[in-house]
Structures are given as structure tokens and as C-alpha cells.
Image (cartoon, rainbow, N blue to C red; front, side):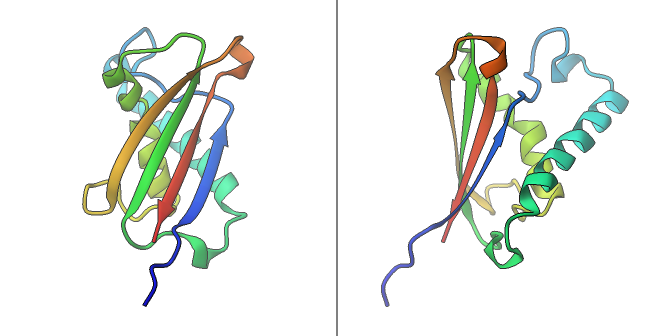
Length: 129
């Protein structure tokens, strides 16, 4: 039996999830503010996921490419930390079954430099078999 080509789901957001550091970073965020932010990101994911047929949603292991479009590139540990809120939103919206290693085979982060704040954002590409 031939291998099936991977199915792909893509999301683009014209805003950035919070980083680990900084004035509004996850480390300094009050738990209630973090909960509101989590709810907002879950709603953003659900709004885009409503156009995806239920049968197309991943139920098995997947690979995730997380791309940041930034004016200034950041340290890799901080870039990967930006996925925390978005990853939890993908789980809460039912797009991925879990964000643990048992469900996510690989998480790759990429950074691309852009000009202007209005071009900053992030994209998620989920592929699974």
C-alpha cells in the first residue's frame, strides 16, 4: 500500500502571540490576563478553523511549522516560547488533539524579517498523515 500524501492545514494571524520576556511577556503576565489572552487566541483559531471540514482535522500525530514575521529577529528560545499560547489555542479549538510529543511529532520554528509593524504576524502549518 502506498503512503498517503500528508494533509495540510494552514493558519495566518496578523498579530503575534506574546513572547517570554518583555513588559507584556508570559513570565510577567497575571494569570487572569493570561486566561483572557488564551481565550482570545482560541477564538482566533476557531474563526479560521470553521472553514475546515471536520474530517480534515488531525486525529493522529502531526508536524507543525510555526513561522514568525518580525521586524527584529529574536533568540530561538524566545521564538519557540511564542508558540505556547497558540499551541494551547490549537488544542482548545480541536485543531490538534494535544500539544504533547505523543501528538506532535515535530515543532519547527522559523523567523522571517519584515519591514513595518503592520506586516508582523505569524503562520502555522500543520501536516499529518
